[in-house]
Image (cartoon, rainbow, N blue to C red):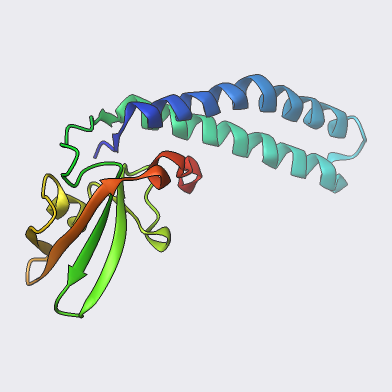
Length: 167
């Protein structure tokens, strides 16, 4: 499955890759080199820590490069008053008699604890291109769905500032 990402997501991921390659990698390699020179590697804790940090950096670079390579780029093609990516949506759920606020984001930015839901999630899919006052049906499983009423749709600054560090 390809992750749906915005151009901004890809730009931020590329910036992180560049920083890790140009700034972090040389520092980590130097640290490994210095700790290796301290003697017996089997008992050299600093060497193992430095090596682990270097490997984690390389792993993160590979992960981000793979994400960019396999990404499906999505555009924000919703009207100003429609629910879509980078929009904050206030919902009323009659079944539970609660009002909830969510921001629809790309898969890289999702964080349900902060109210950031993926455009690929059941709720994110159900909200797409609906407007204030619309009633939507969110299909969670084959045998369970629920209804929600969209109370408000607005542009979200939270989505723009949400960190990519979730991945």
